[in-house]
Length: 454
Image (cartoon, rainbow, N blue to C red):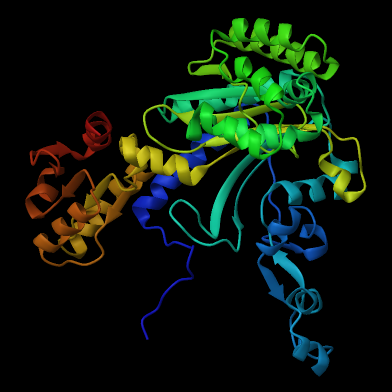
């Protein structure tokens, strides 16, 4: 029987892993530059930790793990005959694979609260699992790259996360637009048009503006029961244009009667003032129709779109007020972001933005001509590795053609040869596999030559 892997999962080749690690290492470097510390949590959590945290639909997408041993021992024949899936799952399973990194992080904070120095700045780069229907761009196993700051209400935290987004995408050479909004602004808009109880419907509709246009948004609002008068009041907000400062001035006029709306305006004014002083390399824009995770976020909201390729959001996040309340420790505010590593991978592939070092792990291959020649090459190979180059010695003294084919297949840029003649002269013959040129280099000058030409 031909082997296979579960649907919604993937194997990654050495080249793909080099490229994925380039993404992860870039993100990790920027996180650590800003003082974030890495944690890891187990792949599996207790179902008590996971269930009820993602809504009814989310609970259905949890991968549950059967209890060890004779898991049917305590199940009666009547329960099996009844075939109540949810009830059986609760009896047969007490663990599940993590669905995201946020709930495990909340559990971690509650369990380790006494050890943590607040504000606590953590990052986490690990896989998560969802029993979703696999389709293009949606997998059952994928990586999340999260960073959160908990225990501080300061807007400097929001600024820092915007800077991190800017620095990561600048390092990856992906031109992006970092969109910012505020949940309080959205609450204020619903309030001033007299539809506070319809805030979820309103924001879900206007969040689709890019996909369905103004007419489509208005149709969705009408279907949700928003009054024609309220829809009319929304039009200048949906169509608001201008600089960030101009948008904030106009929205402040529209929301002057809403206390919560004006709080959002003031927070955004402060944030954009700091962003201007920080001078990001990518555009950061106020987007009043941005409404991600409405039931979760309570303040600033972020979303990042690539400018040079059609792709959904490649990063996002926001401010939340009660991360740990689900575990009985209320009142701990936080703000966080997550990079979509798989989508970033697709963007880099589409735009061919990987640097050479992201695709190549070996810099030099020493050809194997036999035992004496290998003994001659070993000190040089060791010295090159100590200097930071990736070096291989072909393990078998086989045909030159086969060894060269190996170098070509692995895209190794330099092949180093030493036969009897080179050994007598104390030199190596170095072949540039890209240009085909080769020349003799003194043993003492080999390191300098390779670094100069690499």
